[in-house]
Length: 130
Image 1 (cartoon, rainbow, N blue to C red):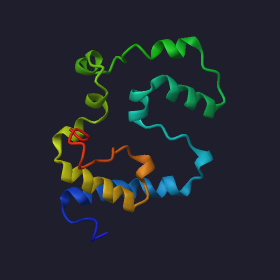
Image 2: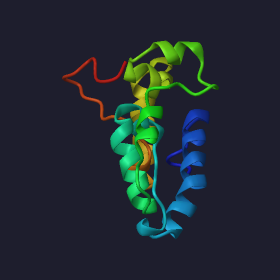
Image 3: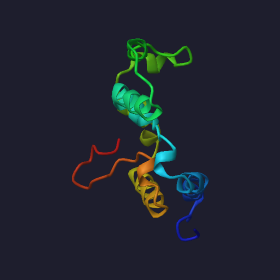
Image 4: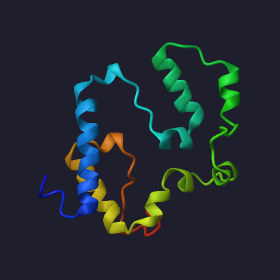
């Protein structure tokens, strides 16, 4: 842990990993349906179908119709935008590429890459992380 947590940022990422690793590793994958916010934003209908399938419930037309309506608690800016990156990764625009890579490395070392959507970065693609 000391090797992974070199600074306050790393420590926060490591703490996130520890607090999520224990419950996720204790359960068998069939015992839960992991729903990531990013998946709901990127493909809401497919994610809703997957959740309802897991629960063994039919997906009614009314559920699909609700996908296009913002919740009462949605901020005005999120109601207006269709920019998926702005909705799913606003934190990434506030961090330098090195910090995002550092976070991805820590999450990977804990074996939690599947649970946290940090896109891979590439030296060849400067727009991979904004």
